[in-house]
Image (tube, rainbow, N blue to C red; front, top):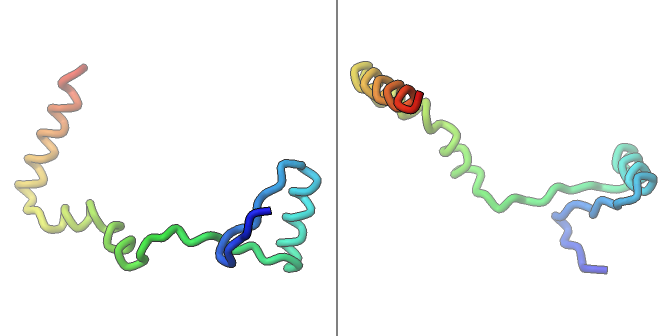
Length: 79
């Protein structure tokens, strides 16, 4: 059996009965199910979430209108 690190989840069994027992054990607190860390920096991930809104806020209304016109023309180009 491979060695499990403390921050990894328990492997999910393929057998439905064993999976049901594992889910019940997790639900009742008999077994702790820890999700693995995805390795992303939380601060960097938070910065990435504001992308489009921050860009729209930085642009003037005329710039946004020009971008929208170009996008609409590109969408209708293939129709």
